[in-house]
Length: 170
Image (cartoon, rainbow, N blue to C red; front, side, top):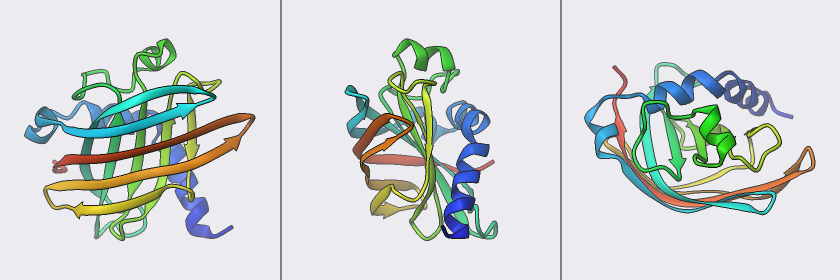
């Protein structure tokens, strides 16, 4: 395993709860305008249709002097105040994928929240693909996907095309 892969996993784990809430609670113009996504997020045979995309700038995980992004693909339009609510995920009314994207256009890690997971959450690094059409500074657009994967007896995958206005870091 490479140290970059391991650092991606550690980064994804460290960001599970607080980053999802912060990303969804942004009050900027980009968050209000929202973005769009078209795709599916399937866990253990339960599918959610992805319809919304949001992005914000963050310091790159490997070089803080460079700009990275947090990209959220969800089945909820816009960003509700309590985005990432564990109760909503457990109830099956919210499903989302949070990607940490580096300045080099690679996905460093992901937090996957879906009611189909045993604990409603799975982290992943190293197996998510990102085909970029637009990479900032105002919009993040392209396709993000993961081939079917099985871990801890759970099978999951996603694919989404998206266009997300970027909320600037404050």
